Length: 338
Ligand code: GTR
Image (tube, rainbow, N blue to C red):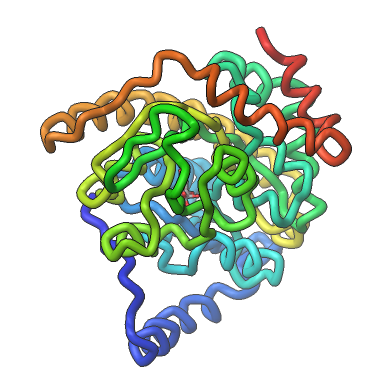
């Protein structure tokens, strides 16, 4: 699970890295043959090996290869080797990468209704989260992905996101005052942080470690497995479990790539993706548990936030501000509350 903390390489190195990736990109172009031959897809992933989401991607690839008798061949590229998440979504639109596992907050920039997933405290907890994702409305939101040129295959778990900082833990909203927090590009999180008196900086995932180390930012927010796999706890050891968002992960493929598949292959891919989601949820639960242990071993004190109402109250205005554009999706999420 060791990760390169994403210190930005010198420009020369970046060109060299691009030169290394380009042949991969070109070799994979037009990956689906559509004529009964082998179909080769690259699956872009930002997490490192060992992360539960990567294990699920790999399970999906292995099962699909086996059940298609080697005909559908998905290769998982971890650690943002094919680019940062936002860039990958653009590459998928262009057809130069076939598929990815990404986070709904990143998708929001391409598919406006997906911004609803980033609404703070819109989900009460895991039961509500899965009740919605597995409902007809959850499926309808998945279908909205076609607006961005994507076809969604499965939702994955991503737990709850909480703030972690280099010095002052965020145990109540006012703790954000004077703190500059990294957010995912294009997400609603910036508005939420500003509503609580903090400031927000959008930054690619792999730049967050060095951003906190050098003091460009004072903290970030994420779930426990990612806090551990990125080793962000080394530089930002103050984590407070305010759990402001539950943002699903999604496995998606480019729409044109999808259209090139036969009906039979689409069915197979969907079936394996749905099973990989079940697998991912199990792996996720185990890793969340294990992450707590890793943090304890490393002397990181987890600040529990028993009363989350002050956060909910401070963020009520964000919900109101989005009544016109997201009201329908937000109502559907609220209606799925078990
Ligand atoms: C993680 C998510 C990643 C990435 C990351 C981030 O929870 O799984 O895909 O979006 O958050 O904060 O950039």
